[in-house]
Image (tube, rainbow, N blue to C red):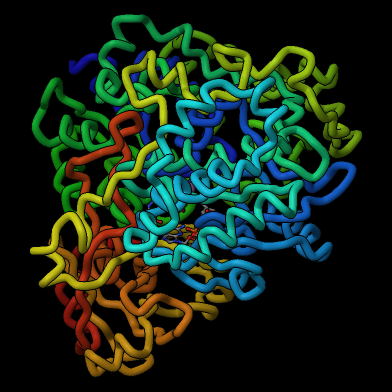
Length: 622
Ligand SMILES: Nc1nc2c(c(=O)[nH]1)N[C@H]1C(S)=C(S)[C@@H](COP(=O)(O)OP(=O)(O)OC[C@H]3O[C@@H](n4cnc5c(=O)[nH]c(N)nc54)[C@H](O)[C@@H]3O)O[C@H]1N2
Ligand SMILES: Nc1nc2c(c(=O)[nH]1)N[C@H]1C(S)=C(S)[C@@H](COP(=O)(O)OP(=O)(O)OC[C@H]3O[C@@H](n4cnc5c(=O)[nH]c(N)nc54)[C@H](O)[C@@H]3O)O[C@H]1N2
Ligand SMILES: [Mo]
């Protein structure tokens, strides 16, 4: 009734089936697949790197030598282990005692060992990166031969960052100018170096330019695709068959938000997706057309999208909602149909690391499967077959074999033979250049220019901050960051597992002891954290590891043990403090999850008994 575009396909992050979701959307004929990570996680790095370097680059931990310096930027792979540079490789690298630079508002365990620790105000990473570029260019310590031969637009970059001195950046970032200089010089002097960056730089409305600025630091030292440097992957697999070619042009043109955010949903994107706020608006308001159905494969929407109340209001307007998940979540409770899925050890898949690099490939094989659960890939395949969609004759196994074709091996053979490690080759760009329009590393991005965006990185103050909104800051004086990862939980997943829950039974907010004292807050007190949008309760964790002007609260909290259908999702959920409203990153459509404003006060404990009684009548049969 509402056209194919009236069905949105949702997903979460980092699970086996994530690539199958945009593939399924293309087969369905809907341009609108989305997830809380498409504009906020990894895709900004992937798309930026393809425009700048022609592919993803990774620190060289498996080659001829380890890096001599590691730059950890808003990233703690020892806990988070994401996107392919898995934590144990980082641990191996750390054992060889490289120099360490850490950029983080919190002194995390990497920062404890750092040679230079840049403790910055959340959301100002762009200014800091520009200042480091400024130092290297002013010092003339860059690799001139490499720059001349293999990069495009150096002079224009030099012009752009000329005024971005460490003294300029100090009041913006709260990092002393001398430390910025020291970091830039250590980065150059200790080469070869690896860059490790995380999603903190993708949680602001200046995401693309922040990622761009940081990505240029390795280019200036020329240790690209060299032993111990920042290396392009071996790309052992054929590109995943997302099937963009089966989505008709007139359907592509209907992708929500794609005309405006062309690095998210248009020509600048490797895997184009819809703009989240536009999808929810289409559910709520029916503009520019109505999204009436939502098929969700593994996402707790009420937890991980910004502005959880608006998300609920939007989902309530749907005609039909399906959620496939491992657990009954608050989001599943809103669905018409819930499909129980198989967990990763219950199914077969290809694991290739690092993502978009593929130096190691293995066949993950299922153990036992419990109950009636099915793999997401099988659910999508069966739906496609019932609907007679294009390519539905291909099984997940067929897709794996297509991916493995360049290796001359089938899934069965790979499963039998064990993991394949593709030996590292260096200087791969000497053969064909970099896969960018100029064949060089584009310090000046001709792709961004062509798409109508600034081809050079710039600083932009976060839209809600002590600087840009001093009137809000009078009432909400602290800078808020959310969601630094915990080892025992994956986002909102895992709180029903007692062994994991024991490690962090309750949500915690990190506050500097001096700040806490000012509000009469003691360790383990309940604290009300309020932003201009709402407030939540978490318990105080007093720590001098966080800047006194910064508050960090955990994300992903709900309480599976509570009766009733909402499981306390409105109590401690960080995304009651965030917003889906503009401004967004002009290219990627990213909204703000870190670097907002908040205030804190001591609170009573939450009244759980009252909640339970009020809702127990509507409790589902478990
Ligand atoms: N155990 C576990 N592992 C996970 C996840 C999980 O939930 N649990 N999630 C997965 C996913 S999807 C992702 S994206 C990755 C994320 O993992 P990472 O990229 O490592 O990111 P985070 O752990 O979110 O944050 C890393 C650091 O960023 C800092 N930070 C906060 N705000 C800012 C800021 O404004 N600027 C800078 N420079 N730093 C800031 C935090 O203090 C923290 O120390 O982890 C993945 N792995
Ligand atoms: N405030 C704030 N919000 C954030 C972040 C933050 O740092 N701060 N981080 C953002 C980032 S980087 C990301 S990537 C997103 C992550 O957001 P999501 O990936 O949506 O995270 P979850 O809420 O854990 O939702 C995933 C759901 O998938 C289920 N699941 C697990 N495995 C499978 C499976 O194999 N199949 C299916 N069908 N379901 C499965 C889990 O039980 C869980 O309910 O959150 C974003 N939201
Ligand atoms: Mo993420």
